[in-house]
Length: 166
Image (tube, rainbow, N blue to C red):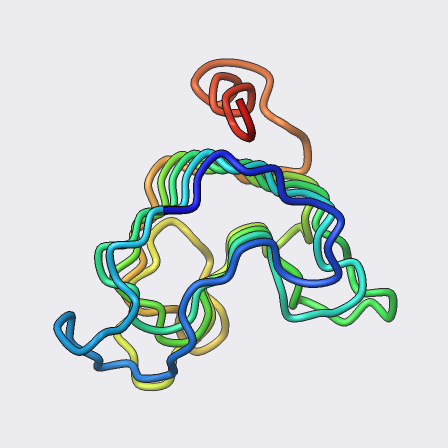
């Protein structure tokens, strides 16, 4: 469990889970599973490197929950290399993940929440415009907020106020 952290001012990614390009890894064989990432406040990341994000996943992460995190001010690479600095980034073969009620703002406009194409993978990363040729594998997105500006009312204001160290 990674919960209630303040993560900021990093050259690269805020939180990273998984390092496996295998798209067909069974839950029994997967080394990454049952991860919980919740109520973290992540900002000013990707200040030096690119191909990074506030929260980054790669490969099989069965029964992983990414919930109620606040990610903002993801930096654009100084050489404007795009689109590889995102808020939530589900890279190749990300599977078994539910991302729910996360907030992403002031990040690269079209890639605040991004599912990378996985070769030969079924297309399932609901609610997003897919990357060319398809999107990540088995990522369930539920009621996330992604916009240029922070939320101003409702459930998302509560999440914004509750995230981070208490």
